[in-house]
Amino acid sequence: MRLSTFVALAAAATALINTPPAAAADAAKDFPTRPVRLIVPNGPGSAVDTLSRIVSNELSEVIGQQIVVDNRGGAAGIIGMEIAKNANPDGYTLITATTAATTIARLLVKNPTYHPVNDYDSVVQFAETLNVLVVNRSLPINSVKDMIAYARSGKTFNMASAGTGSQSHLAGAYLLQAARFKSLHVPYKGGGASSAAVASGESQWSLIPSPAAMRHVQAGRMRAIAHSLPRATPLLPGIPPISDTIPGFDYSGWMGFFVPKGTPKALSDKIRVAVVKTMGAPQVKKGMAFQATEIVIRGANEFRKVVQDSMVKNEKLLKSLGLKATN
Image (tube, rainbow, N blue to C red):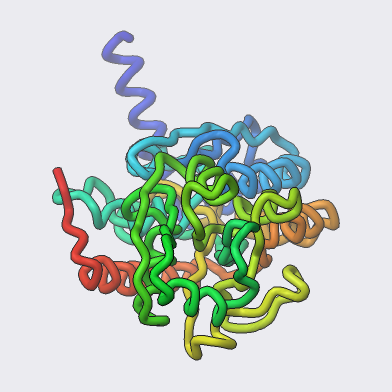
């Protein structure tokens, strides 16, 4: 690229970012004029990917442009978050922000390369992803009380997770602390492998995100006995909250969209309005309900607070588990 061309492009990008509010609002009127990239820091077929596609398919219709899902899994979400951090802040890159990739993964490395609040702009939260307590169907366990009694009986009772530091690991560890029973943690390489282990009886239980859990439960491969919301939910009729047995228990995840830091506010605002409209579409409501995921809308400031609180809660939990950051 010629130096003069590079300088011109750099100047154009700087002008967009530093556009006065009135001019930025005018520019947002025609936005978007080309496809928008959605970086998903998880692999295809994961729970995060499934929910992201439910939303992005309808969002494409709302904004009149294609949403191109760019799966960037690996390193528990760190790779995708790094790529998203360094993307051009022009409104044409969205990031699916989740509890695990956004706030947990960075706590497990000594020198994290991104900060959930400082390196991105929050746009909107659109979902709360409850965790479902599942057990192998052959076990005589139909409630949390049954599970605690079985665990204390001395029989083999291993907890499967999607890997050390994953949401399923921390959710399960939080349950062990709250219910005061012991279980050997068996980390697998991803949620698919850990779910398969419970279904086959290689491991006996797990506390996993609802999209991953319910497809196995509905297929009869494992039994759901409780969920992590602090209240009953119509999404899981007949399945009580863990808090009915362990008062105060609450460990669910969240999902929303970030944009790279410095994205013009007028564009973020327009995206937020489009996402809110998207979440009201019948097909989106149906898709989220099928995945046992609650639609929860929070604006930029509220969502940022959710992220900050999640960072504090998970850092305390990691310390209590003795998990230390690695290189």
